[in-house]
Amino acid sequence: MRFISVLDAFQKWEKETPNQPFLHQNINGSKVTLSYKEAGDQIRKIASGLKSIGMERGDHVAILSKNCSHWIMADIAILMAGCVSIPIYPTTDKETINQILNHSESKAIFIGKLDDYASQKDGVTDIPKIGIEMHGMNEKLGWDELVGKNEPLQDIFKPKKEDLMTILYTSGTTGNPKGVMHSYGSVQFAVSEFEHHFDLPKNPRFFAFLSLAHIAERAAYEFIGLYLGGSIAFPESLESFPANLAEAKPHMFFAVPRIFQKFQESILKKMPQNKLNFLLKVPFINNVIRKKIVSALGLQEAVSVISGAAPISPDLQEWFKTLGLDVNQGYGMSEDVCVSHMNFPGMNRIGSVGQKYAHIQTKLSGEGEVCLKSDCLTMGYFKDEVQTTALFDEDGFLKTGDLGEYDHDGYLSIVGRVKDQFKTDKGKYISPNHLELPLSDNPNIEQVCVVGTGIPQPIALVIPSEGGKDLSQDALKASLKESLDTLNQKLPNYEKIAKVIVMKEDWTIDNGLLTPTLKLKRNNLEKIHTPYYAEWFSKNEVIIFE
Image 1 (tube, helix red, strand yellow):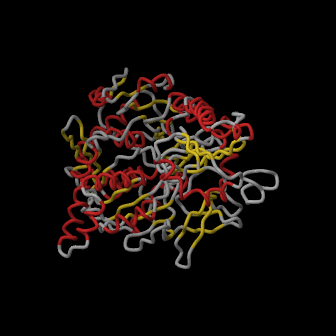
Image 2 (cartoon, rainbow, N blue to C red; image 1 turned 90 degrees about the vertical axis):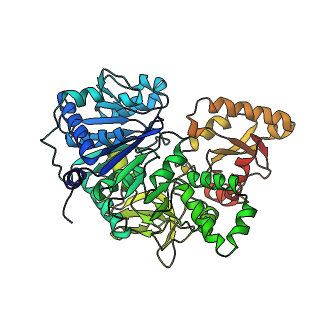
Image 3 (cartoon, rainbow, N blue to C red; image 1 turned 120 degrees about the horizontal axis):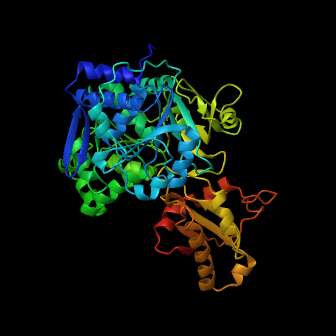
């Protein structure tokens, strides 16, 4: 495969289709569209601006912003200048921002569209800050200022496939965030694998609403968009999201399960399930209803609708299937540019994460861990040789940490984690141990297990101690609520525990929930209780007795 970098791809469309729309920014109720030529002019001037403030080849430059046209332009400008881009989630707290900027050795940062920069500002280190004025960020250096006083960069960086392109920091729920390094070559390989299986139209339309700091979103829209000459639209806000999506009419749509749940809720608010069931059984009318619903979502021209980042309920997939909308689940991780397995168009097996991409090698380890080898794997973790070495087995396969099973047709199902970490339906990794320990400090709690796969927030399953069992139900509730509130005050929003479930049966060696050394068999416990997570989460009470 001939090496073509994302910069080569952008310049191709900039030259061949200069007037084609590239970026659509919804702002203040209107839409600002930039063509490839218009965006390219700003990008080249920003790249010159980076050099003018002392950025050199190989320097690291961060982006802290919600999705917007300037995010994409900043990323391309960083690469054009020969620098390495460091995306940071826009909801990251100041301590983690500071940690990432220091660890990544970032020399400058773009600051764009944010909801609460006031609480984050102190985390930004003493480096040049480039504020994006369109989104209210007024720093000593401004985007418009750099565009106004710099000429377009002509000497654009020409990367080799092995050159470092970006470092992606994980959400950091297992301790310090790890910096996942990717080369220009790994990104091109990932896109080529996608092109092998998906047939998008020429100049496809995309709608980027999940954070571009997440590898799946960035790969699906920025990387694929650049290689295929696509156009990318961005929502203005959560409130305008439905209208912006309906207007964008994307050819591919990627979302986490929670978004599809929200779609379902919005549909059923307008048309109750019993009425929907009736109409879908009526000849001639049923197809009209299906088309009307899918069009209202803005997905009527979507070639592929993909769910990822967390497990999606098979029941939810089946529900959308009755509307004529195939929601295909995929599987990947930051370390492989999210290219591993996919339910490809027309080959959807609900409940699985699909088959492997064409040129990916896979195997299951002795304990059932999914292992991968391909040209889109990470170069390793930045400044962390120990974790990098641990990531690969002796044959060079990446160890995903997920337990999997293949069926006779090669469809993979994820059945658990090698370790205890889990994902909520928001796509956030949660490491339960540091949440369980503070709760176990309560003398009224004997055992605790924090779980939450497939629901928005974690919940805690607890076994009361003998002293706890002697308390009245109200007294035990008050004790547990106090411990919960104390812990949640110290946690970021995505880790806050939503419910405490007081279990009626002890966890013992005899019932298979404890090892002989009295360690919790988390996988066994989850097999029993996972079907109840959503029901418990939906209850109004915070402390629930099983």
